[in-house]
Amino acid sequence: MDGNGRWAAKRFMPRGVGHKAGVDSLVNVVKACSDRGIPYLTVFAFSSENWKRPEEEVSGLMSLLIVALSKHLIKLRSDGVRIRVVGDVAQVSDKVRQALADAERQTAENSRLVLTVAFNYGGRWDIVQACRKALDAGVRSDAMTEEVLSDFMAMSYAPDPDLFIRTGGEVRLSNFLLWQSAYAELYFTDCLWPDFDSSELDKALHEYARRERRFGGVNVDPSESRGAV
Ligand code: FPP
Image (tube, rainbow, N blue to C red; front, side, top):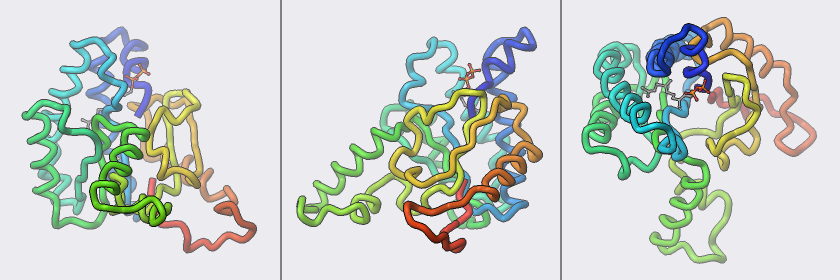
């Protein structure tokens, strides 16, 4: 969800205003995905690297998360959205951790759309924590396979993403879902996240539909797509 800061700067406003607009955009995109029958949406809300931002911006993002959850949770719950959180939440404040855990608990019965919020997440962190958990579970090196390790990855409950969208003009993965995106179709757009709406989502989905997916083979089985973004 890149481009909040630039969106605000274009309007001569502080970066926090852009993040706030980013939350509104996220709420709209969740609804649009739900309307289109997309069962999994995963968003990069705070990366392991985002701690390097000015203290004021980091604490603003933390407060925004709490405010956004309290503002939108009831609606998300009644819309059938299940919230799940992935990332190293042991490193965030008790208040933020509790807000995230509460959102997960309150929506645990839902299944229309699984919204995974990656918070203090990094793809390399995920691979390392999966290896650690596998070793702790007693998996021996000769039993270690891609399938076995996948079961220990933070998003083992979800299919791998079919479509990876990055807004804001940068053309890189920035340590997001590295393991899971091995065969994801990548879509980069200059659109700044607060401007990313249902029509921008449709552009991405149309582009996705044009792509020929081979998963390293020759023939494509359309049923391989699970509709995860
Ligand atoms: C990147 O834009 C965006 C972020 C680091 C934060 C994304 C967070 C939100 C959209 C808030 C919603 C999340 C939750 C869960 C409340 P940037 O600041 O790097 O923008 P720039 O590249 O234009 O500077």
